Length: 312
Image 1 (cartoon, rainbow, N blue to C red):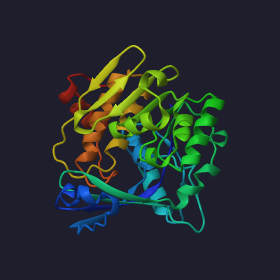
Image 2 (spheres, helix red, strand yellow):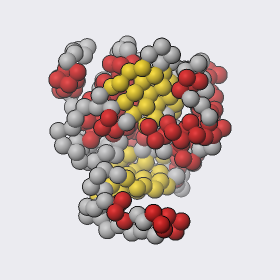
Image 3 (cartoon, rainbow, N blue to C red):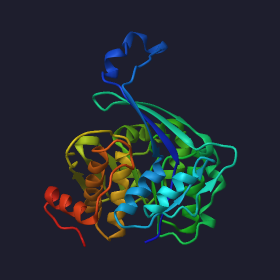
Image 4 (cartoon, rainbow, N blue to C red):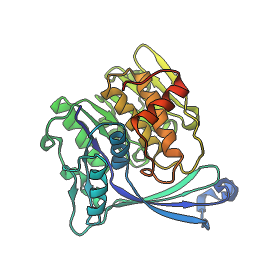
């Protein structure tokens, strides 16, 4: 299956705060917050939603095609991705710009406060599915909002099945932009907070979305995920990590696992279970592309948790 993954390409600057953010937020002063957190550590990691998804998808045995814009600092990143099985032929480097940057602080409860610098991601609208070649399935993950709308329109026009994954851009996008991406998508995937934002901004409920979509998938962190289809609802358990290191990229790994399940011809429930196993591997490491596993290791963990066997 030729899967095209769109979204941001970024470098992640991950910081760790030893306390709790909540203890420093005063409800009576929310109108003029001024906070500074002294962090214990900082790591610079390769990131961005699209490469995160593509990296784990490649570990799972696919050869995903990355379609995105990056800055002049991308050559080393490109080599890394290609070495790990990701096709970067559709990535365009933008002269005179740096790749997008994600600055994220996590507290002891795994709450996060983050800022995102757009950089070369602002040029994502210059790319087109019309130039991308054959595509069996696409995922439109967080990117320049205008580009996300354009990609959804192109996929519908070209008859490409796409999963709409607005993610962090739910806060930035208007209700009309979100509606443009959702209506006609093969599936919508988001976390529970993003789902509530989508409902508020678009007025769309899952039942309405399912009139044109095959499924709505809502992830819920340690509480697993929920899948709605037109005739069923599935509750998927999260896979407990051996240790919790860093939540960055966990959702991207879930998406990669879900895509791999679809590529294998699995149903939505099994695909989400594969996503849950992939998410646990990421949660156990610092950074969204620090994990590694073989298909045999992955299958054993799947069997241990869900009591079933994955295809060889």
